Image (tube, rainbow, N blue to C red; front, side):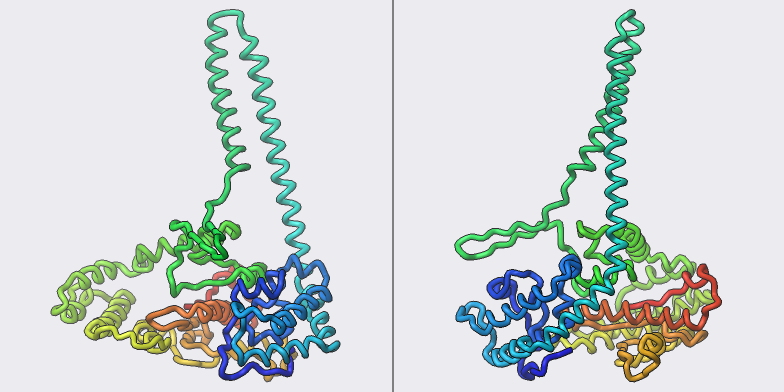
Amino acid sequence: MVGSSKFPRDCDKEYTLTPEARNKFTECNYILTMPVSSFGDLQYHVDCIPEDELMKDNPEEIYSYIKAALYTIMDSKDQSVALPSNIDIFIQKVYSYFSLRKTKDSFIKEYKRRMDENEPRVSKRKIAKERQEAYEKAQRLGNALTMRGLNEFQDQYIDGATDSTAEEEAAKQVSGTTEDKATQISTTVETATYTTPTKKVCALDKNQKKYVIFNPATFLTAPHKPKIQYIDREKIRDFCEIGMEFLIDDDNYKNEEAMNEYKGYVVDQNKFASFDSFPGVAEFIQDVLSTDKEDFIKMLWNHEKRLEATGTTRTFMDIVCYTLTDFSSNCNQRLRNSNNHERTPFVKYIVPMFKYLSQESNLTEFCWCEKMIESQGLAVSESNDFVVSFSDRKYADGLGRNTITNNEELFIECSSGFDNEITRHSLDDTLKLLVECSNSLLHILKQNKRASIETMTKKCTFGR
């Protein structure tokens, strides 16, 4: 549902209003948060409404906020938040579109549809919250009763025990133990009740300027890593469990099981745990990498461990040899980051290792650079009433197909160039990989409906 106006071709489609500008145009922090090019898309506006606000069922009020914000943009004389001149006409057309009655009706219809979608999840979350609150209340009551019982025990058996020296000594011992336990319980309760999360940001406003100081022990996520925004995480949390580096210190993310699984994978990766399945491979790699550059290739292919190896261990060592040979050739050329073209480092540094893995093991067959994903259309055709043209086609930068089952199981996306990360592309590709992997699993499940749950839960697809 897009307005009749088209965004100017010579403008950046990813251009968004700065928080400062948006605050001048509207008091609602979720209004006009999408790219300006999407201001005429009603679905985008509904997507940006937080779930708590959405479920208040006030579409007409929110619609009026959006319309008022668009008018404020047109009428603004403040040069500090002025939009590029070639966007002004686009904003005027969008405002005219929002002035139509049918636009308002379409917005309310989309709003109601989204409410109906969210209702089961919100109800489920509300019940879970009520249960959690009841559980915590019971815990607090239990702690209070325990403390009262300890105090009564001390009053009756310790403070009143004065008949003999032996009894006094025993009372002292019991009292000491009881006080320690009471202190421990009290400390535990206080810790659980009053512990506050680490403060990550300090913001100062002075002389109409804003200064932000970040805690150096937080926000340490490395660039070029998967990332997902809060609004997207909330929408898919009933379908996907997310574990990523930047969520480790997120005070609002409570999926402990997913994060523990992620941390376990990180530990395995750091110690190259996969090499444990191929005896001698780790030692082989360590020996080769400690060799001088001049003798590297010779040592790589003529290493005693490789020549003596057999079976899958030999195959894996050959994959290592091909990959490191290609890598050593790359090391002979000085890096020249004259541009940030994403496909160049992808083809140069990433493709070779997967190519050799495929060709030497014969377990996976790869297609590269915008290969259409067949399982995508097959998985969603039923939800589209089997109309093929309705399917949202997806193309992968790298697509690995299992040579035994012929299923698409490995999906690779290159989001940025070698030099700088294109964050928006990384965010989009994270969601794209989730779609590709989940729809591939759905397609596999459609083909094996008689398989047991235990068997199907062992099936994996991979996104990189």
